[in-house]
Length: 326
Image (cartoon, rainbow, N blue to C red; front, side):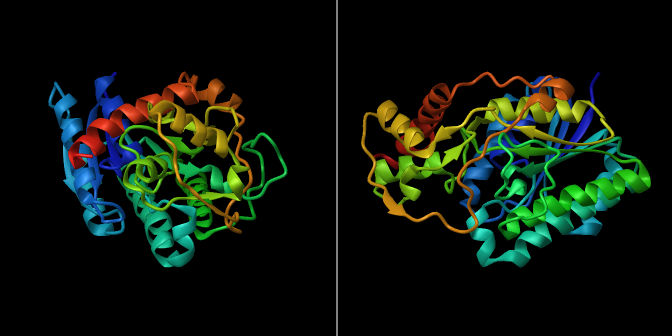
């Protein structure tokens, strides 16, 4: 059954892939993005053009706008007759949030409040929130499971996302809004942001841009390929579940040093990374228990880390290297 879905952050990394996936399922998609300059807006505009290029049925419409503007947002949702809202608009990045916490609270928490208020006001059936594994903080529970209290966030980014999850519960409790909060684990892949590790390592190899490797690479991450993530996001958009918090990861830990070594092996080039100590806002490892996602969302990640890096490398060659004439 066709649904009409508002996707915020539609021009970004995960947002653009989510639009593609929803369109491939026959849904109508309205994409909203403010095209901010956290990284070059030209990359986001290119993502939108790719969505339009794959939209064979004319089901995609893009609006430039900001979720912090409550009045404009309410007008969009009031006139949209949406079945679901997928909120992927956010300020991302643990380390950057330390320097500008107010911006992260404004976008990630106040923006989410605006969306929830309009969703309630205009009867939107389903609300999906992009959250983060950073919500777990420095937990002793391995793998990370959704019943963890998550009450000791290590950075403003994590705080903003955990608070948004709690706000979504409030709107579920008071007004019956179906709200699914998806905790993403270290997503990577084509269209990735330039501040992400895989992208930074390739930039270091081919452009000699500085790149730190923290704790000598003795850190572990649940690297999750973007196509697997968006399967979970799209399934959540199609399934009102009441209120749920659900991990979306691969369910496997890979050491950072090994991840970098795979990139070097696949490209046939060595990186020149600078060793740096782990910062206080970072954790040593992330590892998702994905049993709840399998049960509620039929979530089943398919892409190995090696295959995911190969796909990212293929995209980087055509979208970055060829355009820079390196």
